[in-house]
Length: 369
Image (cartoon, rainbow, N blue to C red):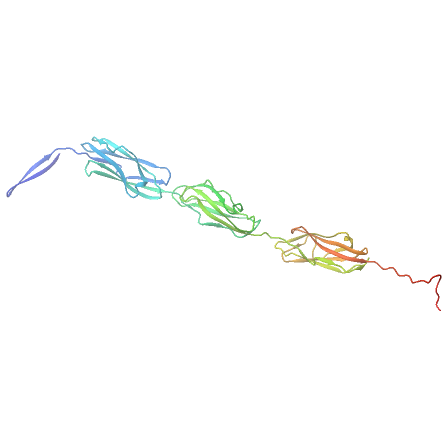
């Protein structure tokens, strides 16, 4: 019942009359009055709960419907509405099922509005939740290797960190495009699950197969935003050191000698104009007249190493054993291309000329007068 007073005026006189009005009205009780759905992983599992509306009055409560409102309403859903269109007798209740499925990280706020015939015409239930997500960081946009020679190799460590608020799942890791065959991964982080604040380290190896600018791309698949992560991978390669051989002169022509005599020693300079060490594996004379030429040791020997830009010497002596043209070759075995280098050798052996007998007359001897 509602008690009040009714004031009546008769000219200058006023009379107050007590008034009692009897009747009943519906009431609204919402549980919970404020709904917080906590931390939920972005694009992960959906968190669901319910709001219960109870008629706390003495008259029927008619619920017209419910709706979500607010700038973040899209992150919440009404999964089931057992209140819309319902008429609740005193103490009866209904419920609205609410879920939170954040599409981005951060705090989200909205409200559930319930329209009814109780006082005020509607009830507002504030909704809140926080979207959490992993975040991948590597601290660099590329992996750059120092210059290497072809045939060498080097490794760098790449650190992957989870700076977000939810577990980070790392999927497949691969190197693709360009000169991908010159780069390799040890796969240490593939398939790892990193808790917030945790990290892992993977090795990236560079072993160039050819000289020049070598480029590729490292791809890391993960469940954070902006997957996959792409990193440029680059290295510079120079040609491997190469030994070369050159001699001065390329040919030795000895002066003619009488058979049985020995000539002066002629010098051959062996040079290395290459970029790698030249290994001399053996020096000898070969050919048809090989016995007429002799190797005279100089600063080179069978196991001598000639560094790039350096040289050594070897001597050759000619001592003909027969008359006529005498040809052979100085053979130098080495570790450069072609493996064998040849210096042509030539000389001529001379034999004594038989004496010419004096002329004689016909029919007998001659005498001096």
